Length: 216
Image 1: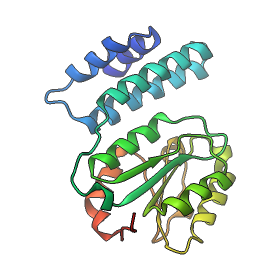
Image 2: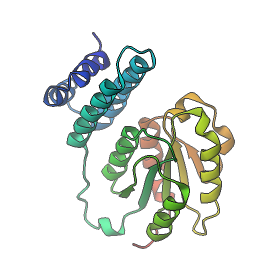
Image 3: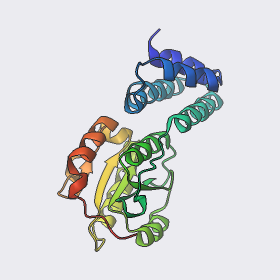
Image 4: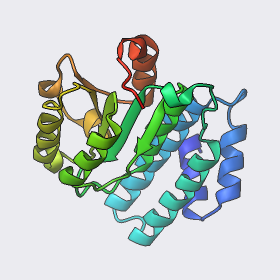
């Protein structure tokens, strides 16, 4: 039994503590990014496949999501770097009707680990409500998550709206849609497609000094 199959079993059984222990001991030394990218993400994709094939119920999928959320929260790194109030800022959310949020929480964790100030708004957020937060927070980077192809028109509307912001924030598009579909039409000098957390990590390490931080 591979790692993600074993973790899916623990998630579906509701075994929070056992799942956390399994994740923490499955790799030596423990690596947070690897835990997200090679364990939690494929586990939840596997659970999604089980649900799509009617092998588990909606309640089973919700239980597994809750357990994954618990595990993710336990391993999340909260940056304690000095001067965080002057850090670069990122705002993260899922487009309207998008219910998936675990990937967004992993992205938030990666940004925190790099010393960014994170405003995580969660999934299923209408554009007008996002704009209220954005104009107040004025993030250097806006991260958008979408999973399913039929949300492509909504994603396009959101991206076009953010490209009109006067301080020109960088825009990152991620989620399962970024893995499964060709989103190259969105790419520009300010819009980037992030297919996984490793790509995000590389982008942060290479480009974060090029982002002009706004004042808090």
